[in-house]
Image (cartoon, rainbow, N blue to C red; front, top):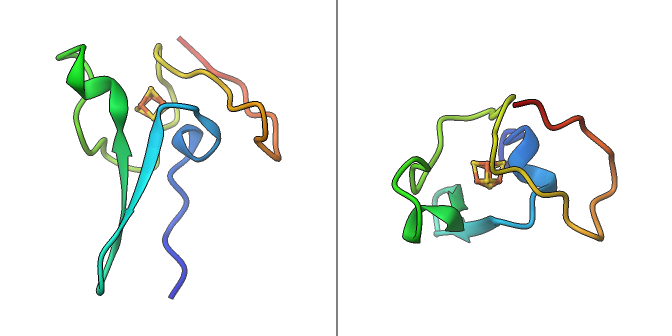
Length: 65
Ligand code: SF4
């Protein structure tokens, strides 16, 4: 079953997709160094100051602060 869209995280270089047998999670790697970012943000993320587009991201969402 496909996972629901994670919004900005899906094209952000700080996202790490974590897959288990039953689910897929979108982890934000910024949580390790900055307490303002939750390890597992509430999805979909529509606005994020920490967003940085991945070089290979297919779409071009606007990062809003
Ligand atoms: S920095 Fe923001 S957009 Fe990027 S993965 Fe973390 S929560 Fe998602």
